[in-house]
Length: 185
Image 1 (cartoon, rainbow, N blue to C red):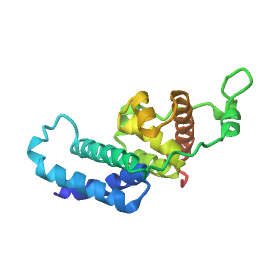
Image 2 (cartoon, helix red, strand yellow; image 1 turned 180 degrees about the vertical axis):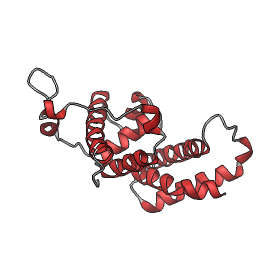
Image 3 (cartoon, rainbow, N blue to C red; image 1 turned 180 degrees about the horizontal axis):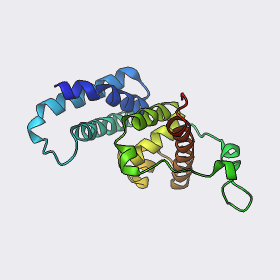
């Protein structure tokens, strides 16, 4: 029970990102927590407890999104056009601008085990525009295929890849600012 209260804020943040409604996100998290309690005997330990509970929440969120779509309550994604910001990071030849070139974040395993990194990552996800955060999260955090994302969000595959690219660039920039320099985000 204690483990669930520790993970609840991250679950709620994740649900709000996808559902765009605080009350609906609260309901999804509550349903996921109830399911985790009821099915705690089925937790096999092949993943972390938090990952297991996030998996339950993922399915709850997808069910809600499908229901919203069926009932006509679905909010389509707005098309964000920040091509100029992306273009400024590259030279005409397609090479990175010197000041935009990615820098090393350190040893990946050590970074992923660092709580400060995840605090910065969460803050960066929160400041991403809704469209970018939602598509990135569906792909990288929830593990949906591009085809599934396109079907769920009613977008074209080429648009999905552009959104993912923009999300990754913005996340990289934000994480480098907050993680490498230690600046407030």
